[in-house]
Image (cartoon, rainbow, N blue to C red; front, side, top):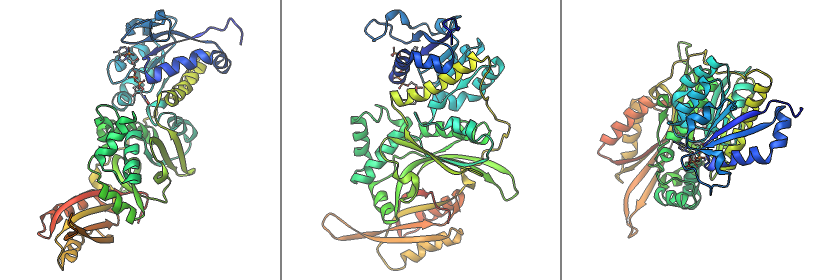
Length: 441
Ligand code: NAP
């Protein structure tokens, strides 16, 4: 590399948790980055809302005029770290249309606008990279798009939301109920003031959409992802799960399915599920993330690490930035979006999974057989039943709880069964219906 090498100009949009770490690494590692890229990387400006001289960078590096910064002739790559969908979408589209490569960590945007942005990148022959949008520091987008490009991915299943994993881990290890585990997560800064996007599974669904799109070469958006959050998971569910040798995790599952007629389909879904303690995802605790990929030739691969946080996320952003910069130095671009397969999305009703159903029942003879009969009528085969007597605060018997674990059944058959159980006189209430993942019986 000579000192005359044309520098690669970078604009960073956003100077928050992630943006400030990216700026720090660009500044502190300038020499190493230049050697890896083959040209110096120069920060041209930082887009923010609040321009002030107390932000730890020279004030003339800051601007609230995003359009102007993106349009500068000396900016080759735009790193978008503002979130959420707007104004990020407009800024990214404008950058791509002006022939600049883009790196983003914006999962919310990538899960809804991937087609539009990918087409703009394609049209301009530039890179659009988003490794940090799924599972923070963990490399999973690049392994799927590059390392496994010659294999056939069958399944991607993961814990991709640290907030909910922290809450569920707390409930499991301390016996806390959902509300106090959420309060703990908030106090420690793991949950946002409005935790809806995390606890209702929207964040995980956005990531599932991105993973499914890449793994199966099919455009999948967040609206295609079946979603359930964790707000209804109870401490009693954890007690029952333990007795069954399981824990409970919020899983994002993307699967390639083959119908009886031999047609391939894609399923993408997010829900809390019982996971056997022997499964690799069961031991992923606290705010950590993990993704298990199953491919035809490679078999099972597991990726584990920090799924959020300024510095870990900045690591993934920097990986993309260096790749995009190298491509520009070499006058090319990296692998582009691959959506050739266009597989149909399978509705949740057709997906066979195992189920856990917990219900309160009258404590009298014959109840168990009437409950079992409702499963039998809909050909939902029972794998295991547990009946627990319940006691009130005075220690008096006050009904019973039945927990049923099924073999594989479709969501449609199970929903019908649960409705029928709810109508039985002997059933006082259905407490929980959760899926059981990680076993195939
Ligand atoms: P953040 O701390 O809230 O920072 C956002 C930054 O964007 C702030 O500097 C803000 O400016 C700037 N900004 C927001 N709206 C703007 C606007 N309209 N015009 C100009 N600047 C604007 O966010 P973050 O946690 O760094 O997250 C950034 C992105 O990374 C998001 O898409 C997020 O989903 C994604 N991500 C974050 C993590 C993580 O752990 N934090 C992990 C993975 C992905 P001011 O500073 O002036 O307010």
